[in-house]
Length: 80
Image (spheres, rainbow, N blue to C red):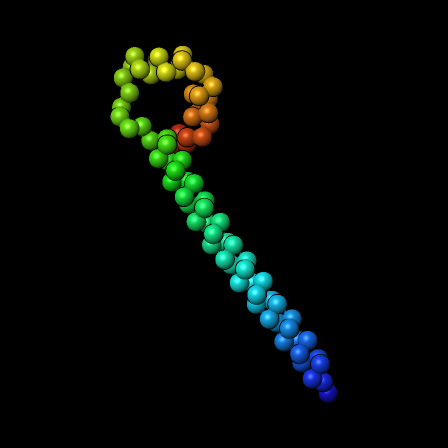
C-alpha cells in the first residue's frame, strides 16, 4: 500500500517537472523572439537604402576594407 508520504513525494516530483517544463518553454519562447528580432535587425542593416552608384561603390570598397569584410560576413548574399 502506498502511504501518504509516498503520494506526497510523487506529487512533489510531478509539480517540479511541471515547473521546470514551463520554465523551459518560456525560455524557448524568449530565445525565439530574440533570434527573430536579431534577424530582422540584421536584414534591415544589410538592405541598401538606395542603389549605390559605381563611383560610390568603388570609393567605399577602397575606403575601409575591414568594414566591407564585416558587411560581407554578416549580410547573406542570397535569400532562401
